[in-house]
Image 1 (cartoon, rainbow, N blue to C red):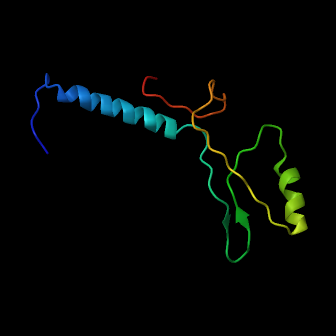
Image 2: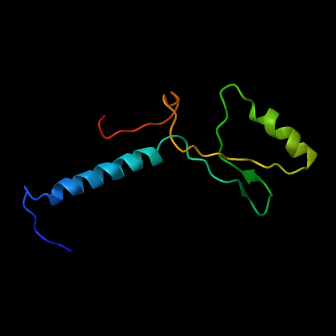
Image 3: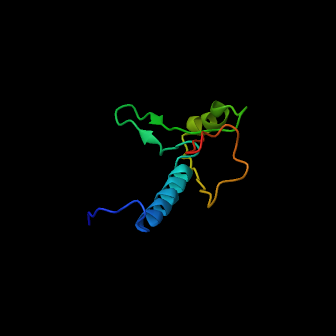
Length: 98
């Protein structure tokens, strides 16, 4: 409900707490690299998949044997309950305080 509130109204304190909670949740949700599911092009059968591999890993060495064998590959994704501390130096991080 719309209503005028003066600057000293206690409602603003609760509103600020809600905004700070939401900002912290958005910061957490936007850390790291966005990965997506593999997408297959209907005409060519080509698969496009965004992924991130550890530094020094050759993606072709990992995927070529599976591709050449004609077998299927199952990829397992694990999600963390909390971010590790310290966060990897390569991670994209933004903050409201910077």
